Length: 213
View 1 (tube, rainbow, N blue to C red):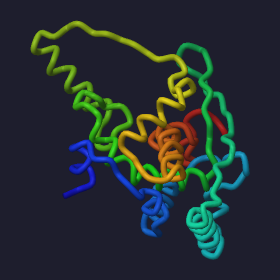
View 2 (cartoon, rainbow, N blue to C red):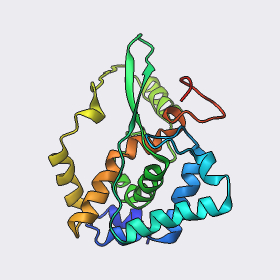
View 3 (spheres, one colour):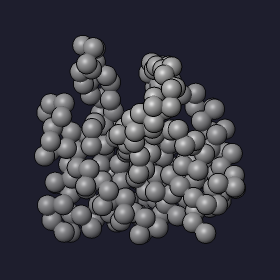
């Protein structure tokens, strides 16, 4: 049975931190970070610099592995960047370091199947295998069925104002174990939006959507 199928029964999961530390998970997370590319964080280290030499890439990945296994890993500050919104205002975004993006992606690989099972079918934002086009097709189906009432709502500063105590309580409902494991889960959820929207907000070098990094 797949992890997502277990999740559907509301089962709590244990010892997830060990899964985040697995070499194959780390390598998959690194592959995802490389595909997304993106601007460097506060440390100024770019993916290009890391991949310039095979030994540099190996040392980078070994350092992540060691810090996770020894439980000395600490996330760095994010680089703050403002991008223009269609209404003329500015949106504040944070660009994590490449190192932190790899760890966030590793946490996401473990957490996503668990929390994905808790979403309703009508939810499409930042979910694997779903897009705005899928949502539009469903809306068209509803319109043809005569359901024409539309409710539009937006939460101002949603990701900046999530209560951390309630976030931890939600994590405890699905993830059990050591405090370190739960903190890793919380870190992953904090980075959830950044990881999934990386192509839009991390300024891929091949397609800089909001200006130079």
